Image (cartoon, rainbow, N blue to C red; front, top):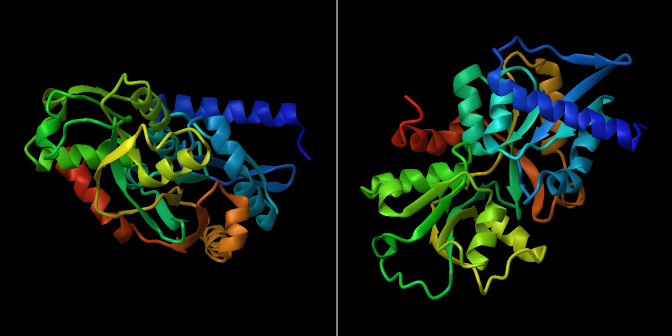
Length: 296
């Protein structure tokens, strides 16, 4: 079994590759081998407040998949939702747990393919939300929130940036001038700033909210939901263009074949399996990309 120091080194090396891929040129994808075995480079979006927490809660799933395939593996969780999309485009990730928007961007830029959608509490859907401090005088949303302090996440984040931005644009609102606006924060930072009174409003996702409440990281009395989006397709398990079709099918069967109880034992609280997915399932995300001018 790989030692702790060795695993940390390899995770840091992969994280560096993910970060550096933002400046790399796209490369053809090829399966890697290590000591005569298939070697898989996994990456997962920052589902928890820190990368370390994300890896701790979700690494058992990736280890299970690798074990079922007789493969070795390494796993990284960058701080940016956009980083995995870029890294996959540039050939540094074999299998990525991407946010819906990250998947759509990777698909458009390099032909990345979704093979499964994650289930949360038994459903392959979730919602973007805007949270705020209790006591805000908002009777009509979003009109009454004009001038309030709003924080959205980085532009690679589906529920944290893409969906609320598309919503505001459809309402005829430029959030950068309508609010005291900032962007780039993690969900955890948004929640922390709301609880501390530094922010009025911040973006999040409902499954993230549930997870933070269960973990004791959010006091629901201090952070209330102001706005909820229409249903969105959950996160996408994605492989690059040119990924071995036999391996792709095996991996899809492993993920979709997990019982909810088994899946729950391998993943963070609330996540309990996968369903097969195709690109059409993410049309609502593409449409939001067009609204925001990020897609042609």
